[in-house]
Every structure is written in structure tokens, then in C-alpha cells.
Image (cartoon, rainbow, N blue to C red; front, side, top):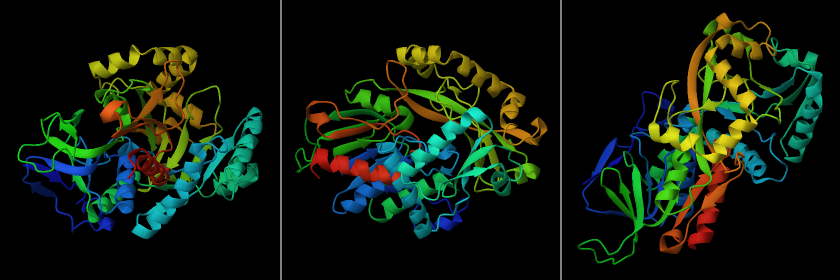
Length: 449
């Protein structure tokens, strides 16, 4: 028997989801579970794609396989919670189109499903004169991306929106919002199950191969020619496979015979948290003007749905792909990262920036000093060390951050039946419903569904 889990009955944590109708576990007594399509990866991209696939193809059978005992635990469960509006991205690019559409779909979905959200807005604040041309360029970029209601505001208007924030000019994005992305992802999963999808947790895919023969006692022949085997020896058979592996997307590709590149290199981001009595300092999202010389966005102020305020993050190499603590270490993950030519080149190009990130990660006062440029009243005594997240950053061999979507399939019979989402770059959560549409389109085209 194979245990098919429904980890969505989280009434204690998310009573608004009304999950009482879903059984916690259901045991299916069958030597082989067979489906038309198997989706590997229970993060927000895998869950959104599963939902979109089953809604478009209700006559197919679908399963979602997740290695953890619960869904949406890693990148999705450690997300800052921002609904991005699509300002930053190159006009006409896929990232820009998906983010703008994804944000619209997210608000509509949350409204329809009763998922709490706040359209609290965002200010991208210039604190130095030399930042103003870049800020104005961002405004033009946002306009070209059809981001609604953007405006440039002066120092007085900044104080009207954020009384404790100081800047000489800002880009006001009122349609930026916040939401609990883990709750959104679980809602996708609940909907997937309600319309007939099967969620199997505690299933870590360790091998994907073409079956040599049909299962014993089966009259179906090779109707389900793909075997996905778990690290515990369980098997699922299917006709087609979609992998949305996040931090393990490159390894899932490799076990099915695909290239090892682009390689996933994990970067940990550590947040500070305002003490509750200081939450009044921040109303909405406050972001810096991006510096094109640096690979990551920089520190920002992010209000949360629970009323807390996160500050950060920094960006440092994680020594474990799911290592959320400073001293978390995995030998294989560490060796894979530091031996990769792409990471070595990225480090050499950004060594001063990288050392600064490490320093600010160790010394809270250094991180607060950066944040004081925006809110001078902030003091080191006003903050506590907060949570951390790990970002699955795809890198090419030249040390460039892979900033677009990468699909892979491989060759031969297996390659004709598998689609790997090798890279779903930030803001994947904000874009998740639009990404799911694109992935489903790609599956339909490749597999002639």
C-alpha cells in the first residue's frame, strides 16, 4: 500500500481555508499508482501548475509528488510575502509580462477564495541625488510594462505616505501588496484535490526512467511507461512528468539524463524583525533604488500579514540547499557549489559586495546602518534577528545569474515525456498563476495533450 497524504487539513493555522472536508491521510491499496501526469515538487509553482493542468484537462488523472511531509515548506514557506507589480523587469520580457498578469490574477484569486491580502503599496526611495536618474528610468520601465497608477513623488509626499521615511524622491506603486504565499499555495493544493488531483507527500523522487515492461498482472501494457521511484523504494507510474523542483531542479534534471546546467546555487537571505512596539515606523513596503552593479536587490522594509515588519534580507552563500541557519551544512551541497566555475566567477566579480553582505549578516548594527538611510529613527535596539530563506539561484558557467525561465526535456523516449522547469526566477510567487498558464501551454505543445 502507498500512503497518499492530504496535508491541507490545517484548520488550526488557517481556519479561513475551511479544510475540514479533506481527510488527513488516505491509504490506497495498489501495488502501482498510475496517472496520466505526475508533477514533482509541492512548492507554489508546482501547485499552481497542478491546479491549472487539472482545470484544463479534467478527464486526465494527475498526482503531485512532494518529498516533505507537508506542502510549500521551503522557498514558498520562507517568502517575504510581497505581491510584486512588475516594475523592475525589461519591457516586453517574459518576466515583465508574467509578473504584471500574475499580480492581477493573484488579487482576483485571493478575493474569490477568501485568502487575506493587503494592497499596502510600495515606495522605491532615492536617498542620494545620483539615484534619481535610475529611479526615473524605473518609472519609465514600469509605464512600458503597463504597471498601473505609478507616480513619482517628492520628499513631502514621501512623508505623507511614510511619516518616518526620508528620501528626496520616490516611485510610488500603490498596487504592490502583501499576502501569505504559503497560504496561497495551500489553497492551490486544496483546489487541485477538490477536483480530483492526488497529493502524495513524503515521496522524494530519486529516479525517473522508462519502464522496460508493464507491471505484473496489468492488462494495460505500457500505457504508463514512466516510472518515478522514491528514495524509500515506492513507485509511481505515469505517461508524462513535469518537475518543479526549486532548490533541486538541477538534480531532478540530471537523474533523468539532462544537462547539469544551469546549476542551482543556494543563497541564504537573513532578515531582521522590528520589535512589535516599533512597527509604527513602517506602513507599506519601502525599497531602495536598485544598483545595477550588484546582483541582488538590497535591504528593504516589508510589512507582513501578521502585523510584523521584516527588514532585509542580505544574500550570502548557503552551505546547504535547505539550510536556514547560519551553521547548517551539507557536504555534497557545499562541494557542488564551491567547485562550480560559475559560482567562482560570480564571487570574483562581486567579491567586495559579497564580503559586505557577510559582514552585515554577522553584525546587526551594520545592517541597521544601511536601513537608517531610509528611516533615521531606527536604532539597533529596535530590531531582533528574524527568519531566513534560501533562494534557488540558477547560475551559468560564466557566473551570470540566469534571469529567465529555462525548460529542459532531454532526448529519447524519456525526453519526449518529461518537462523540467529548470528556473522560475523571482518573483515566481507573484507570477505563479501566470507561470502556471505558460507551463501548461508548454506541456500541451510538447506532449500534444
